[in-house]
Every structure is written in C-alpha cells, then in structure tokens.
Length: 193
Image (cartoon, rainbow, N blue to C red; front, top):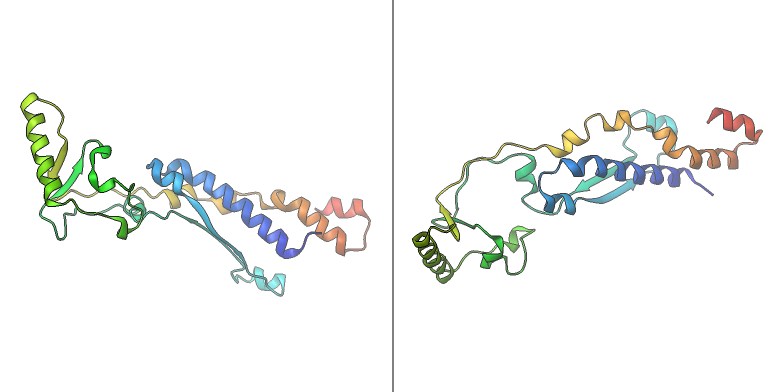
C-alpha cells in the first residue's frame, strides 16, 4: 500500500531521473557527463499539507559530479598558471602522460606532478619530433588563459520544475493512497484524480 512518504519519494526519484536526462546532454565533457549522479534524495515529512504549501522544504534532490574540476567547466575559470611549479605541462596524447598512470584525477589528492626526469625526457622527445616536423609530445606554458562558463545545471534545469507534469507522474500512487483511506465510490475518486 502506498504511503504519503512513499508517494513523495517516488515523485522525487522520477524528478531526479528526469533532471539528469535534461542536464546530461548539456555537459561538454563526456567524462563529467558519465559521472553525473543522483547523490541524495531526501523526503522530509511534514505534519500538514498546509505547512508544505507554506513553503517549508519537504524534499531535496541533488545531482552531483565528483570530479573536482567540474566547477571550472560549469562556472568558467580565470587565467591560471602553475602555483609551485615553473611550467604548466600537458601532453598531446593523454596516454603519454606519466602522471595519469593511475587514471585521470578526480580529487585534488589524485593530482600528481611530473618528476624532473620525466620532464627532461619529454623535452628530449619534443626535440626529436621537432627535428622531423612531427606533432609535439609535450606542451609547456607559463600560464593559460581562462575559459568561459558552461552553466549546464542552470541551463538544463531552467523551467524544469514548472514544466514537469507531477500530477501525471504520481497519479497512480496517489489514487491508491486516497482509495485506501477515503470511504467513497471508486468512480468518483477516479474522476477527481
């Protein structure tokens, strides 16, 4: 039998999945899009419907991306350079980057620095490739210009709540809930819902 809390939880789960489907295609990074997850669905029970209608928060949905650099794509980032290093280094082919041996970093603690030997090896390979006119192995810069924001959450969810037909989403559960508690003819209750 459906309960009021069960109906709210069902509606939240549906909304979370619908929100995820709207936002995911707008994320410019495939890595971040694949990492988008529904991290929290919480329903707070309210003693009265009027309290809920008065604006008290009774439910919450959180879409999150665990990668620390997601915010730099979402909010954009100013020009930056290495904090403790002399150069900012990246590789034409990420598979060549020795810092990524354990995979791409997700948290700040996963970020590794090139050793002095790895850096000099990259310079040697760059010199060889330059001599034959090939693509550089390793790119070096003292700073990098900023990037504009890609506000995928706010753009993806603009008008989302107002445009979702929540009544259709929960009508079956709500109908069962009302039928179990209201002593009335079934056809009248169906007509109301």
